[in-house]
Image 1 (cartoon, rainbow, N blue to C red):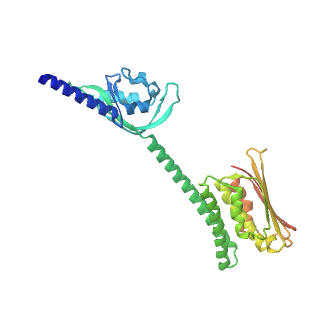
Image 2 (image 1 turned 90 degrees about the vertical axis):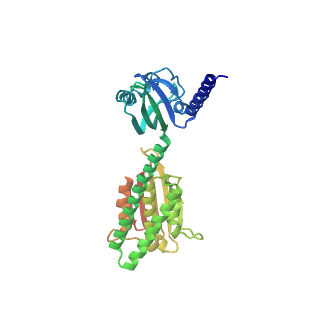
Length: 335
């Protein structure tokens, strides 16, 4: 075998190795020739991004017509004309991976690198990059979580601020204020526990009711008669109702049906689906307690229910101090 043959074989083997490396490279690669950017080479990673379509021998405009108006054709022209590379980071692209498939939005990091010929002129463009869609989506989701966390923290702090300020304003003594604040913080914490178990996607009214009323129930003599269907509540609605139920139960234990041995409380609700959106209609009714007289002033619990609850839920909430027992009704959209 002559030296020339050996050299030719070695070059052929080296070229085959380079082609294999090009095809197997994890990043997408393509070689475009001429001012029309005609595909000369593409690797497997590139095809995974753009889909299985005819590329070789076609211009980018012809083979990837869906890129029209997205700026990529203009960038290729710019790089070819100026001889200066372009580097793109997390650039959005709308591509059709299947001939009859939908347009998909992806994100890519890439470089358009001019290929300089022996005459010093640009003869083509080398394209190299990677699909970073998963990374961008993860970052977007992380930002969404941070925004949601920020929103929840602000709402919780606003609730805590309201509880503390209203309690201090109405409690007769500092020790009583401290006790009331602790009890209300525990009630808020219990509602948060339910929402945390549900990943803050909402909570069932039955679970919220069970947590809110747990400190006031006696397993051997349960004086709560709770009836109602399963209703999925938004996080805001769940927290508001949990705090309202806690206030109602606290007042019942001090002054109402739970302050006597024979008093009972009926807690019922239905969902009126004839409304748009459907409305939750909840009713708290005390029986068998001492005679009720309307208070001389509205306390924290009453204001929480009649003002804050109604405002937050976009519905109506009312407390009636009937002689036979306190009645609270809530009518609010289920969102």
